Structures are given as structure tokens and as C-alpha cells.
Length: 115
Length: 183
Image (cartoon, rainbow over all chains, first blue to last red; front, side, top):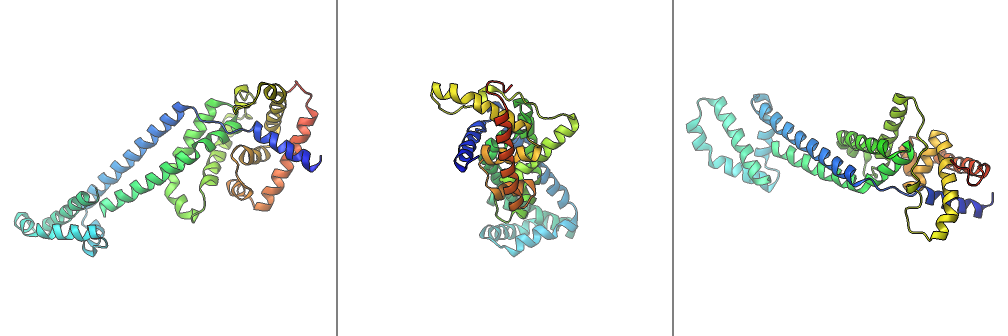
């Protein structure tokens, strides 16, 4: 077959294999499913974070992030968290309790800033 | 840090949403021509995006900035292979006639071209899996050799040869199929 004939054949092939639009209900269903999964994953992440915060070994990461203050937002978190330090000290039963309250405060502030 | 994780997750989801919007039609087209009916194509498309979502972060890291379409099509390819393995059957050949020529054509074009296009489409379904897939990627999705090579896990050279042979074999099949006897 000549080159021109091959080109013609490829043009026919392109017409035969025209892209197919997905049905509208598939798009809607898939988007709903993906959104649900994303929400579930976010909830899971959040509950993992809360669980993890009860374990003192996991306090290092957020504490380092907050104290290091790599962004303006983080600096603001530190500032606001520090402003509440006296109040926390008064409310705390012991050092561990104070540390937990500090981390929770920092997380609350971070949520407010980055939301 | 907790909210940094959440923010990173949201950013990742936004990137995935972009990928989904950009390639839903590609994945569906691939699935449709690969499996041959709309019902299975819908299932395959859905499963492809669910699996892609699960592994998106890693794919993004490993892609090194390259387009992710070949990765998506590769997922669809693997799922389609599993589908046939599970059902122990070949793809259906009852591709809906209404799929052919959905673009604007004159009535005369339709009458003259429809039969030839039907023969081509029937011929595509007779090709070995790898050749059929390469043609679907090239002509239905408009992928270039490099993208097809990535999707199929082959070298660029091997892909070029594969496509060339697929076209030649298809031409032979179409030529040997009498007019009006494509079904």
C-alpha cells in the first residue's frame, strides 16, 4: 500500500476511533464517590491526629513546626499560643497536662489561621 | 502540623480533581474501545479513577513532572486485563453503531463512510490485545509514541514498530472483509 493510501487509512482509523464522551450520570456518580472518599480520608486524618496527640511521642512534630515558625502563619500561631501560656499554666494539673494543653492550643490556632 | 497535613491533602485532592477533569474522557474512550460496551466501560472508568486516587501521591512523586495520562491509561489497561482474566472472555464486539461518526458529517458522507468505518472498527477488535490497545491510544486518545510507550511499559522504538505492524495488520483485515459484511 502506498504512503498516501496509508495516510488515508490512518485518517479513516482516526474517524472510526472517535473519542467517546462518558455518560453524564457516570461523571456525577464518580465525582460523588471521589468526594466521599476524600472527605472520609480527611476525617480519618483528623481523627488520627487527635489520637496521635494523646501519645507524647507524637508531640515533637507539631511542637517543632509551631516553634520553628517557618511561615508567617506559624509565627502567628506561636504568638497567640504564647499569649495564652499563663492561663494554661493556671489550669494545668502537671507538666504533662501543660504540654498537652500547649499542643492543643497551638493546633487550635493553626486551624484558625490556615482554614 | 496537623493542619499542614490537612492542607497538603486538600492540595493533593485539588490536583487529582484537575487530572480527573482533564482525562475522564480519555479513560472512558480507552475503556469503551477496549471492552466494547458502555456498561463495562463505566465500571472500568470508575475503578481506574478510584485506584488512581489511592496511589496518586506516589505517582505524582515518581512522575518527575511528566504527564500522568500514561499512568492512568496503564491502570485502566491492567484493570481491563484483570476483567478478562476473571471472566475468561474476549472483549465484546457489539460496539454500538451510534458511536461511529458522532461528529458532524453530511448524509452522503454517512452513507459512504459508515460501512468502511464499521469494518475498521470490527477489524480493530480482531487485533491482538497489544496492537489493539496501541491503536486505541494513538487514534482515539491522540497519544504520541512516548506516552504510549510509558502506558504499555515498552521502549519508544518498540512502540513505533508495534503501531506500524498494527496498522498494517488492520489494513489487511479490512481489505479481506467484503463490503457490507462487517457484522
